Image (cartoon, rainbow, N blue to C red; front, side):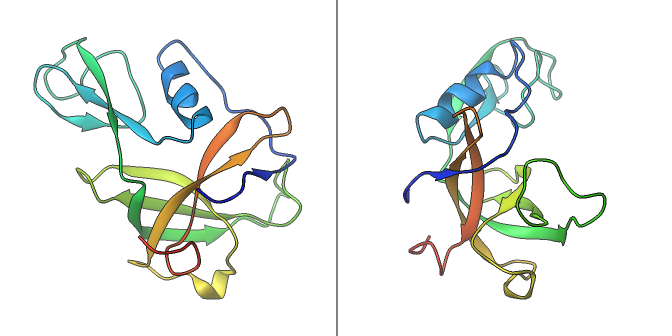
Length: 143
């Protein structure tokens, strides 16, 4: 993990089903929910498995490596908490086909491409919570 970034971003919304996700992020870890019965990985976190409907949930650490599935720059309306229009991406993690909507940091729109390798990093919100963001693997030290 590179040095912690700090921004004017708002804190994420947290519920009893997602608290663990944000606690893991605060520790610099990207973890995903896994069904304790059928083993299916799923995100976002939810109270029951969408595959087998079990309430048996486990945390599974992810490598933090993935690829950009799709991306865009949000310009209008001006996003709250960003100094400049953010790069939003749908990142597919290398484990289990999980996709996360996230930000790509330290890159320009011209740097991005579908299937580009990315690696997780963490950025602080204005109130000090940690958010998982991604950077291009070539710029972040490799995946």
